[in-house]
Image (cartoon, rainbow, N blue to C red; front, side):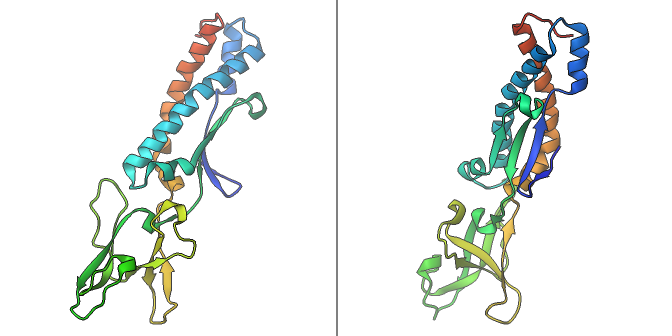
Length: 218
């Protein structure tokens, strides 16, 4: 189940249910400790696979690089102290729109001096920003009200050192920094399918662990 933990993280939890352990305890000669340990091992065998697949799915869905996605996703292995439950985690951090694939759009302006900082040649002026978020879409024409602003912290989040801002009024300070879907949000899009895969693989991994102990799981 996805939820916010401490206001920071969205998680998928995975563990062998108490009902399943009770069922096994009634049919096998394994001790409760042996069953609990097998459950922990099964969870910890499946979680790294799910983490890699979730990262790959996010990368296939949106135009974020692999390093950026890795920095914002992680796992917590199961242990007896966590009741045999492990977690996949996507940190709740905003993703600047400029972190996605973006490009300065220009238009002809014969008297314009250009802007080397933003890659605008002489004789051209800025005419908005083109942005592509989803892998399945081509870069949009963007909005003429969007423009790059250098960020004080430079290359934030391995982006291009700029934020994309939108003008919201006539005053110089009437601007708003724009953000796209966060990694945690995209992680949430794939949670139902990921959970289904995880439950299936967990049962297979549990049977494998019990077989290694000399038990045949029903």
